[in-house]
Length: 391
Image (cartoon, rainbow, N blue to C red; front, side, top):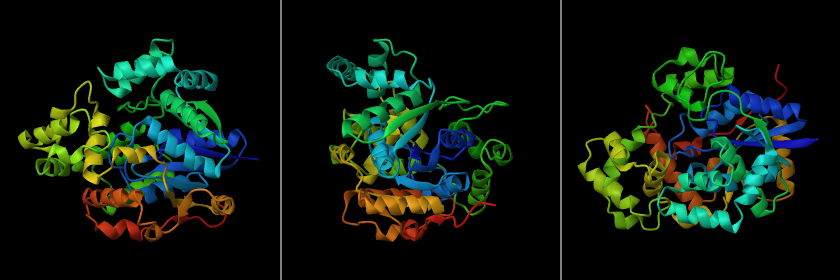
């Protein structure tokens, strides 16, 4: 028997995600857990629905246990995202399964091994001085023959590197990703769409179309979220950013993650000359400062995430949803120690830096909802527990 884990945003869960869950079962998984992004995503955006709703949809679609990949790691670049994710995954699983464009675990292992060599690290540092870190990383791999790696491949490399770096007893396996590319915005007949394309449909109000390309629990969750005013408009964050940075000075953000290299100064200056959040965002991003880098920098400044925090591991994770098998798995994990799993949000350790920045994120999240919520609303949320076998 094997316990599998998948690290994902599930923003929202779609048929491509369900495909990987089903593949885990085919590969012999006795249990399938997911370490799922909290209320923010790796691109520095707010998730379309809150983490509890997405966790519930995951368990109703075949996952046994959904744990949070907490903030700020869930909104960070690949290495930090992967490190936190595999650390939590190793607490509940012996096998990490992820989708990749190449579907070749040996290729990804070779790339991960090369990334630890001095020549790669030197090339990366040299290139990073003249271009963004993401582009420098890709080009440093391409120049030695790894030119066919795409976004999910690169994330897989980050997973493998993190497992090796921490010496975790976690086997990495991959399945070839099917359907549209990660950032593809189009929905094509007969092809599994990306979460990006699904979010675009949501923004356009095309909910009827979504029902055919996501699992039924996800479709029902999204319909209910829209009816209850629980579907976030990610662009709302940019409007709050315009106000925040107009009233701020760049010197306040010297220790903030992703805001170095003059980016904080660029954002604060642009805020004073911008008429809207969208204009602010457009005036700041460049080839060097990618969309994701700018969004993360803004979010980290607004929530006080210091760069040194990302170099630490999460102090706790939160239970989002589970069925009977997931609860058994969690009980077994607790007997062996490891990371603290918070089952009630109000019981989270408030004396931690992680709690402080998470609370500030939730405060922003509540303002981005059509039906705005108070700061404490997230503390009253409950994990979804599925009792008994599905009929």
